[in-house]
Amino acid sequence: MTFGQTILPRWSPGPRSRITVSLVLCALTLLGALLSKESFLVNYESFILLLLYVLVPWTAINLVDYYLLRKGRYDVDSFFRSDGGIYGRINGAAVTCYGVGILIQLPFISSPLYTGPVARAMGGIDLSWIIGLAVTAPAYYWLAKRSRRDEPLAVTR
Image (cartoon, rainbow, N blue to C red; front, side):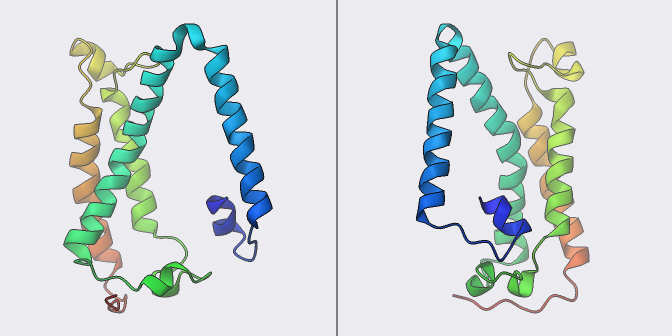
């Protein structure tokens, strides 16, 4: 729903839509768990690892942005404006670095669903999250510094 609101800023789902989406997602999750009960722990481990692979670059971007670039100073009201306020609707540097952060991890992943060539060559050691962090954080710092030169200073709240 958040993604939908980003694409269609005028769309504002009400409580009924939110409840419906929540119930559908809950039913699909329950169905998936029941259908895969024989291998639930393997599937659950794969899901947790998938979360690791997508959250590490996201976390690196957020930490760099908060501590190194903006030093905790944000215009909170801009977060809720349909045009993104002083930040705009899309942070190109963040989206680019997030995609690169996920892609750079692929050769280093070692999971039940997929093992990358580097992880396989190292005997199944999963270093993907370290690589994702080590590449995404400095890449975002550099790219965001270059693209923020004309951005106004944020208001502290």
